[in-house]
Image (cartoon, rainbow, N blue to C red):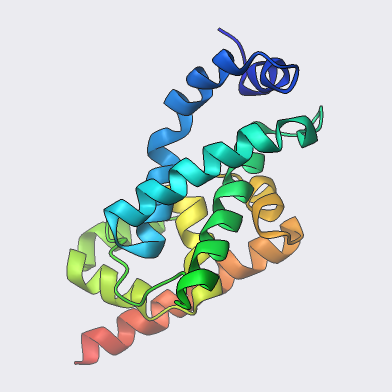
Length: 181
């Protein structure tokens, strides 16, 4: 089995039929990421298609030593932002349903499972600022590593860690507010 990077190197060298394997591997995670942002399945599918069109178009810009995963998520995020500019909509909506996201630590995860319902989780996550919600989605739902998130968002890895930390802190505050209601 070839690595994503090996396959992408072949694609960059003109073996476009190899892209099928990468599409099969990344179709679902990218579609899920895009759908969480736009909330419209047809729009998410269009953005997914745009993402892979750009993979083909910019295949020679893939650098050896880079990870395909962070590169393709960066392309997807850029396609998302370009699409939102055209529609003059914000890419992240407040009605985000991320109730099934795992947390950073086992104890935090157990606490989440024990005391929160899905609707409370969605409400707490929806109340997060957009920049926190984006890193939470990429880290917890999409499974990207901090370094990959940093590459996708154009941030330092330290900044990603800070955003995750602040998001967790804000989630605790949001839960406290929800419980008081």
